[in-house]
Length: 215
Image (cartoon, rainbow, N blue to C red; front, top):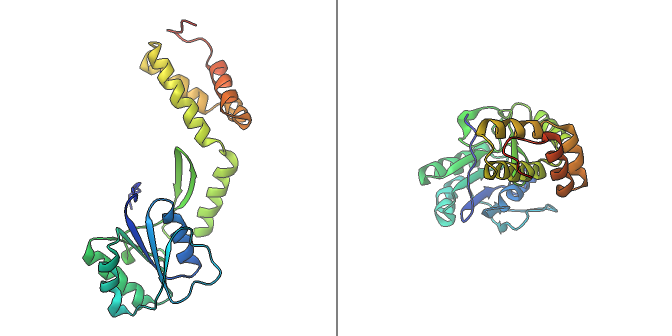
């Protein structure tokens, strides 16, 4: 599968199933999309801002629900494979994407995999194991969070640094070298623990004086 980023702003995501998996998927997509969750019960779970619809659709009801909600993505997250099949088929016929929560490595079930995600704007890291090793996805996500907890700040710092070097007439090859040096510098990563301003100071210190610098 080829990983892509998809903009769900202004779109609807239909989640079928109110169990722990459905709740997790609802929280994920509610950050950007309008989410509708269908389930006969929801329990004591958090669904973020999703609209919870108490219903127990049968397989023959799938097309009606998909047409009614007009989703960009349907998440089939029940423990009933026949119901998941029906909603997957209805979604495909409607032109919507499909994510099967019961897809344990069998990519024939659906056409979208929701990866483990680390988000520290503007940085997003997605990790997928093809449904074969969710525990590994979680472990890698936690490792990244521990080691690169200031990735968002680093992106802001090097973005501003690139623009500054370009404005000062530093050649492109030297700009690339400077940015690579900064993002690999443990000193800069450590300085970011004290905030963006400190990180910027140390970043400029570690690259030193460059051609075109008139300061």
